[in-house]
Image (tube, one colour):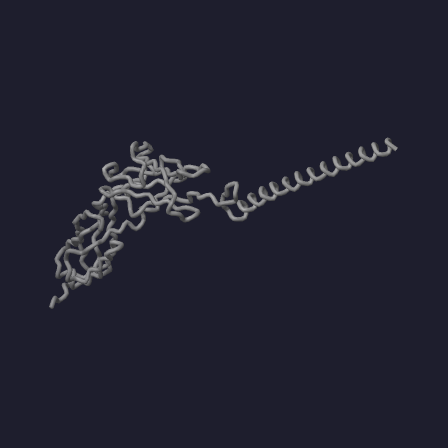
Length: 273
């Protein structure tokens, strides 16, 4: 009788151990499944949403691009504008400025003061997010070149004008910093971009003569003028067209081109009223 009782107790004990062990394994398996599901969810969020997430699944802000406010002129402060993957006003940044590939020390702000830059300098900025638990990479802006404010003219020679006929001429004017790309050719960095050079905003103004129907496009600098035989004879052997080229950011230059006329094949002079 005692043996039967003993074996009954032993069997109950073994069954208890079996069920306890099985429950622990089930709990462990459930815990592992939860972790796996979280990991898969995190990967899927990153894969399908195209952004990084932390361990809790929250999105991590990233710097998508760095641009500059306004055009980069000498005697003007240069300001970096950071574009984030998640708009936020609470994120802080660290800035490193470089001029001609040399770092500017003791300036960790979004603005590069005008005292540091001059016409022709090549500038870029590196920015990183600070104050986050998760480290984010430092991002580099594209190169930009600092422009001067006084236009530079490159006026090509003009052959004699055959009359009657239409005269067309484009005033070649650039800002200092636009006229040479030597540094760009030497720089093999893929982030170089001279896009800011286009449409520099120069304004062309006709000074004289203003009563001969000369058309000067104020935005492109193109001159169009139909010169009749009578008009050419009234002007004599030629005429000087005077104009002004201005930069709205400051600085202007006044210059002129001289035209000489070819006489018509006929020696008969027209009657001038």
